Image (spheres, rainbow, N blue to C red):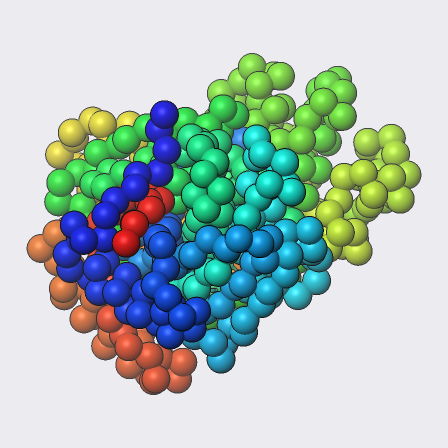
Length: 461
Ligand code: ADP
Ligand code: NG1
Ligand code: MG
């Protein structure tokens, strides 16, 4: 069975070993003895395909070296004792397996852990009464709220750890699926990209990930391609605002309205990919259909309700999420156009990678710039600081775009191997030097080159 690998810590060398030793010693100080094992889950950078996973479309992420580590000792009782290597920012939390409460209010850090545990309990072959708790200490090195998926790494690491404590065997696909569902308890209606790459990543290759059913295809990037990640230093917690869910709902409404206008029962579709499937059209054809059938002006709640032949209160309660019920206007045309065009860019990106073309780097870069413009103008999920980063990078790299949900966070730029150092220095001089938020930051953790890393694993002491 394809489960997360289990590796002996003694066989490790280098940075990972150092991080594990640091955490193990810290765990011993906190809990009185060494942990039994450490679960590691990486963050990710999405190379292209933004805000389309929840519409049912394939995405193109790779795992990064930055990760969440969770040191664990099984308990005999059903307590969960959660603590963090940075206790001042993330205070200790404990609860029993019978008392897991994840309300959609403030997204406290430990709620992401509880999502992971809950996802495993719900899919466990053992009765809840038979499950054991754990002492767990977290060491996270993925910049949080930066679009590099620290949240899902935390959910997935806790899920992998809790499953291991209880000797529950799952495939990586099952774990990815359970975690994608359970992270929604925090309130974000995500699509599954982050949990999929967290579990399925393999060293040295980016993955084209398709959904329903979940499949991950290795895709070799051109050998001279290096991806540089640069944090704009504008941060946003996705679960603490309604931006993210608002986009998910706009896409859902666009799917239902397009279905209705084509004589398809809107109840039978939730994602834009469902409409494409029913109409049996290509992605460029779907973009033309969205352009023709949907209007540019925002749709009022009243107009959408009338189109879908339901009352506004039915729309609020049956379709919208808790934190989007109060939104009065929805941009359906712009969002649907972005999704169909961005989904098409993902396939083009894959084709270019496979083509071996002499202009591959330039062509991939152009797709990345196009993607950024679409995120900025049609999807409106960028941030002025991110736009500035992309603008100043324009003539110094092959392509650049925001990565992750946006509204702040990181840019990913495609750079030829021999220009990485000069590009990073250029950003330090031209973006970070005069940015107040950068003054107290270690810039090597804020702008860095990255290579495709490996997915979730267990390290036994
Ligand atoms: P991201 O793009 O990083 O996934 P999110 O807004 O989805 O951003 O999630 C960020 C949240 O994840 C943080 O506010 C925090 O609650 C949690 N988190 C991230 N890293 C850590 C960590 N090392 N320890 C505890 N919680 C963390
Ligand atoms: P980040 O930025 O890591 O929170 C979110 C979603 C993804 C995807 C991207 C946008 C979650 C857990 N993650 O990622 O599924 O929709 O935004 O492409 O909701
Ligand atoms: Mg997240």
